[in-house]
Image (cartoon, rainbow, N blue to C red; front, side, top):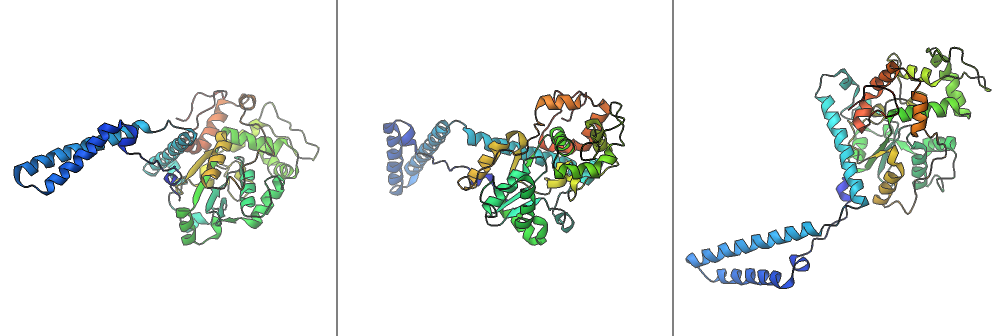
Length: 378
């Protein structure tokens, strides 16, 4: 782990002579030097008296230095604001993790707090760049394809972020980027302690809507595979407006968002990080933020800003930049959220909140105003 303090430009504090009228400052310094010289040649009460004067003068100068240093601080610029936001995000994650760790809530058992051999074997979403000392935990539907492109460019596997399609990117990444799960426990711990670790989160409802629109509405080979594998199961969930799902041109079933939401909200269904259900698996179960102390916690809503700062702070912005999305679903748009979630019953939304509650809490999300529900995570 790399401390963010290493990224903060060092502030060169000026002496008081540069920030206050020259004559008073010089007189204070001259007086202190003179008193110090006299004390060296005197004994008794007079020496003690001069010592007190010297100490008082020293405190006065120190006070002036501190006062002017505070006054001279520049206003909080974009970098300063970004660093403060990072501290806020990380503090929230830490607070929520500690609250679960010290509680009797049954959900606490689903969180990991330390790196163990068992946990390490599941960390195939942690992409490692040894050459640039980076560890990125990717979460599907949170800009991960483009981050893979960035890492592939940095590793020399591709010449630019526009040189591979979405499906090609995932295949090339599997060949050229090691995951943390492939290291020994000791090697993994050393990298987590010394590399810059980062992840990106997204509002859970935006993310599942993006997953639905991408995998069940769009037509490309991967989406067809998703519909063939999960369409029959999802279509068994009741939707009064969609009792007889039609078939698409590729022969797969059309499933409604309400059916998809009920499938997600059903506690009988479990999702994994090593199969296609990773696209709607909880974020905390993929990136384990209670076990890994991330240096940078990005957010999909500030994706490009966070990416630019990260690459700049690592000195990589001259080598690569984070590209624009090549497969947008526009699922963060409030109009899309309103359109899809308006057809869900309150019980459906409550079930989704139960499923993704820890994600809501860890990353500070609340229920969107366009989603019709009475209860919202705090």
